[in-house]
Amino acid sequence: MLRRNLLPPIPGLLAFEAAARHGSISRAAAELHLTQGAVSRQIHQLEEQLGLALFHRVRQRVVLTDPGRIYAGELRPLLRQLSDTTQKVMGFAGDGGVLNLAVLPTFGTRWLTPRLGRFMAQHPQASLNLATRTEPFDFASEPFDAAIHFGAPHWAGATCYPLMREEVVALSSPAYQREQGLRRVADLARAVRLQQTTRPTLWADWFAAAGHPVAQAARGPRFEQFSMIAQAAVHGLGAALLPRFLVQEEIDSGALVPLPGPHLQGPDAYHLVVPDARAETPLVQALRDWLLAECAGKP
Image (cartoon, rainbow, N blue to C red; front, top):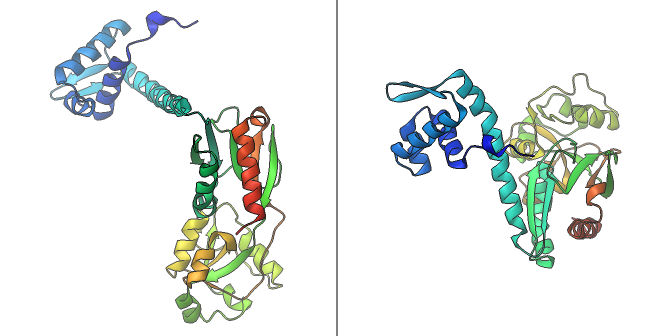
């Protein structure tokens, strides 16, 4: 059971956290839209309840004591979690439920988001929240109902529904292709090769598929997301290996042009991952059915 006598009032905690972050009562008061006197009183009441000082008063500033520093460090994530949980629960105000989906950044922005209007039209009362995750995680400790995953169809405590495979092609800006004379696979051995951080062997795999192994194929500027690599290639920073479906718009517009070489298809694929605990949730099932239908009719 909660020891209610040890739970300070929320206004006092907010006043303390703001003053600790700013090192100033006046700036905390401005942030909280209170008077300096009100903030000082709330902090004083909190200190009385705790039985210790949280700040040293030094001229016009406040400096955390050792207990104050510990308290502030522990308090911030708790307040943030309370705020996030409150926002999440408020989403249930509608009749359609809430669905929290973890997505891969470029897949989410380039492919999924432009299509979400069709899903929301079918479920106008639903609240859909998207956040990015680039690595598998534990659904028991993360607030997600499902996830978009690229890789093998393995995820502990969950079912992976295959959505699509990808076709990786070599691309660059038209100007970079002309300037570097990229007419053959061998020419790309001397090009600046833009690297994807989470796929360090991608260029080596591509050169191997082309029958032209290259030493130090992984050398080149590294980027965390395909969207970053796409922009770097558009602006002439080098040659890129990109899934065609994620950059079809740039290819159609001529901002990126295909370079000579194979179209690489690996064993991995994009999946919708549904944890076993959420498998019977109607909104999760609706998302699964909609995604499978969308991918069957892609691009």
